[in-house]
Image (cartoon, rainbow, N blue to C red; front, side):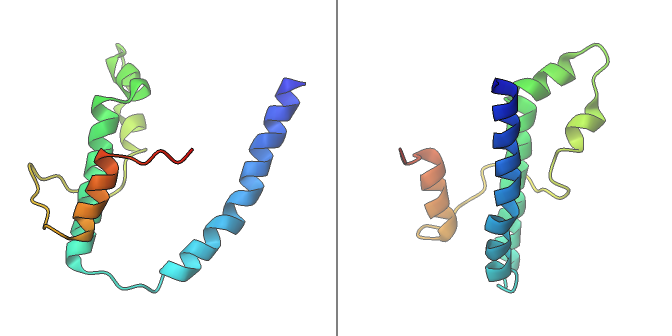
Length: 109
């Protein structure tokens, strides 16, 4: 039945997630990063939170209730963020490259 198939699918995803994620962590955990790269990460996290607050239908619905659960929204946010208006991006930088991808995503299928 469909419910059983769904449960099997979710279990298969859960069973395969850690074995696929741990090698990524093992490979990258010792890579050093700069303060500039950390600041960029925090800015991207801030944009994630901005998106959730402004555009995510579930978050908007939850906040629009008569008794909104603000804590429920904020607990799903990254623990540290930064936000800067009109952040300048250096030409030719890795940050510029990722912004190109974000603005013009590739069709993978």
